[in-house]
View: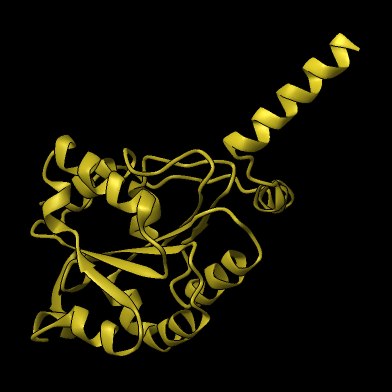
Length: 206
């Protein structure tokens, strides 16, 4: 499975009201889905995991973090903070490439670990292998049903067999003010919408 296919399939899973963190220059280069609440962190020396945790603790919206295993290894200690937080609206998707760089055949230690998800589980995270759900559109729809009913913090791991990079370098325009407004915007529920409509009807009748 190519990394490009995974990111395209991911677009079917995400929703317009999600806060999304794309971490890593190659992830940012290939992403195909973005919203007003999307943050691109190309600088891999920045702890985007802790930043995403802080955002998730301050909003009711679902916060999705997309990263690679090399970045996860670099900031593995931050996952302990995530586990302790018990932040129910925080979700991770880790592309397990087993490479430090797509252009260099240099293996990460994840390639030698017997159970990478077991390490995360022992840290207090729920870790699942989502590889099979990214094969077809039908499979990703099954995952969406699971995702909608899952309580975080959870990390889904997808094994990548072809680490080839597609797409050209993108310039992502970012407005921090719009991002903050999006994060703070209250997420309306169907019940809230129903109450508003009923109130309008009462006012019209009155």
